[in-house]
Amino acid sequence: MIILNALNSMWHSTSLINLSIGNIFLIILGIVFIYLAIVKKYEPFLLVGIGFGCIVANIPGNELIKPGGLFSYFYLGVQKVVFPPLIFLGVGAMTDFGPMIANPSLMVLGAFAHVGIFIAIIGAKVLNFTLAESGAIGIIGGADGPMAIYVTQTLAPHLMAQISVAAYSYMALMPLIQPPIMKWLTTHEERNIMMKQSRAVTKREKICFPILITVIIDLLLPPIAPLITMLMLGNLFKECGVVDRLAKTASNSFMNIITIMLTLSIGSRMGADTFLTVKTLEIIVLGLVAFMTGTAGGIWGGKILCRLSHGKINPLVGSAGIASVPIAARVSHNVALQENKYNFLIMHAMGPNLAGVFGTAIAGGILITLIPH
Amino acid sequence: MIADSVSGAVLISIIDMILLLFFLYVIGLILRLLPMVNKIHLKSHGREKHDNT
Image 1: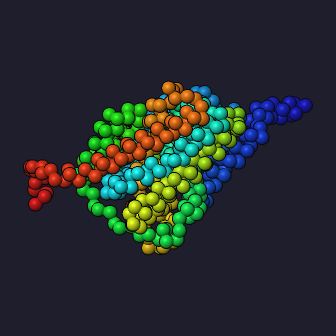
Image 2: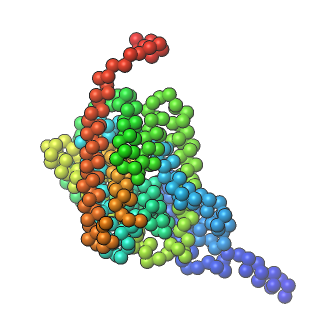
Image 3: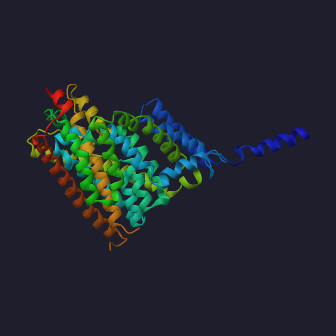
């Protein structure tokens, strides 16, 4: 009897008694994320943390998730919009804006590839989300995680978990989502176009660029000033050549620390009780639509530029106009390589890819300004 | 004030797209002008002058 009572109290002290079907489903989803990261190498820096956070979030009673637990403090960085500007600092410190500076005519592709944002906004409104919620959902199509968090925190903070998970998951899954659309919308000849090498950009141009952009964006678009300012500060660290230590820290250890906290806090918001809803499903579908139509928009923009340049621009660089750096550029490069193993498109695709970072930030800033919240 | 309706969403999307194109065009324009900084001659002193020679 004593043994039975002991076993009974043991049973009640475990988390198993509160485990729901939803929890089990999301634990399996977390394992799938980790599998994709480890085996398929889909953005492991994002998916390992998100997947693990998701598993932990679905073990009932876990102290890490409870208010006052470690992950809840991590989440404050998302909630108080501290992480996005810090991530942008690291991104700036590791990014060479040379390809964008060298080829400004490709900047416009950063706009074409954002068609997905607007289609998702309209789709979300059709599905009866409020205009503010629709704006936050639409920004998933920009494929820029920090920007998605930034806009969502301003317009629809209650959808943070769903939107950040959708944005980061689709960013990680871009190598799966984009290539079929890119191949479907382009011909073999178009994919084979070899672009001319861009001009060399001087160190002086690279130093002036972040200062100029900071002044202009901060003056014209104050809502996105925190993000662009930090992006440009990180880039100035990199390019000025006198603070190498700061540039290395911002782009390596500092960025890694923020990534650990960010991915775990996003994954930890995937608890079954809040995450498994019809709204989540709708947001995930809308996010996918935004990514697919954004890719298509970018390719169509690339095709227009291809015509205008008399066949000098490979339309595949268009889909890189989606902000996710450098994932989208890498996808363009890989699709081109599949057609012609000597067609190295990566540096050409980086131009629109970096323009996409500005595109998402600008589109998000305009949404924050125009939509009442 | 933009209405919280489907037509409002369409309107906001159109405005956003136009402004996005405008801002990216402005940034593109600045990037086109950026090579001008190479024409500015800065006087070099001390170590920098020595490094350049």
